Image 1 (cartoon, one colour):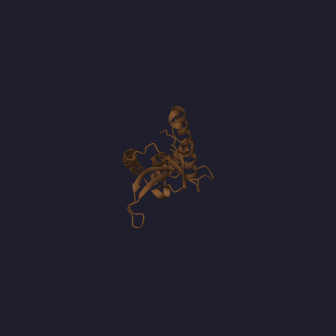
Image 2 (cartoon, one colour):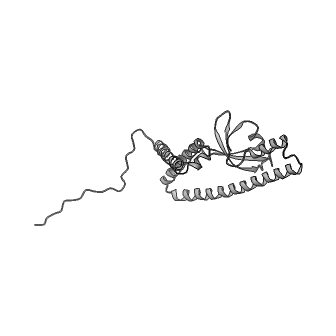
Image 3 (cartoon, helix red, strand yellow):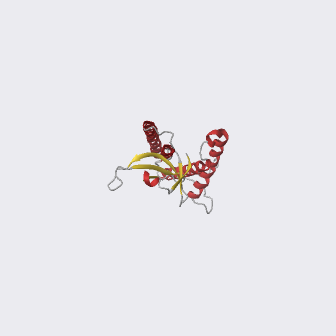
Amino acid sequence: MTNKKPALPAVTTNAVIPAIPGTSTADLIEKAGKAISSEVAYHIQTMYPAAARAVAWESCKRSLSGVIQNTMKRLSDAAEIGSMDAVIKTMAAHRREMEKLRKIAEMAEAARKRKEAENAALHGVLGSDAETVKLDRAMTGTVNSVWKHKKRGTQYRILMRGTLQIEGPHDMQEAVVYQDINDNRTWIRPTAEFFDGRFELVSQ
């Protein structure tokens, strides 16, 4: 008589982790993003207190939270269609390009300040009140400074300066490239408009 072994239960490979009742994927991502950003912010503030004190810390934390949540959402969407690796590579390429632009902008800003100082010294009025005001204005709006829109209360970080090349009256005007620190949307506005009083400086 042959002894038969009991049959093993079938194993499925496409089991789905049950979702939390009443919670969407977007809600889960937002919740996880906030938790992660809080941990990262705590780590930075604890391990690198000097760095935390050197920036507008509350604005920095909001920006960090937005970046983490937006990145998680983007990667989650990409994973669903099998393109997460491609999206990660695209994000890395974007960071490298933005770093190049940031360095170019910093060099241009430094050259502008040197030229301003040279012109002031050449005219022999470096110590006058009028020239002091002029130099102070030239120093505002530098790369990485944070500004708040007075009406909306939204805060933005200046990424770089540039020149508009468009059809219309603003063609070849100096422009400011700035980014919303909450949702990371990037905007471009003529320099004269940006500094006409609608924004106020939060941190240099």
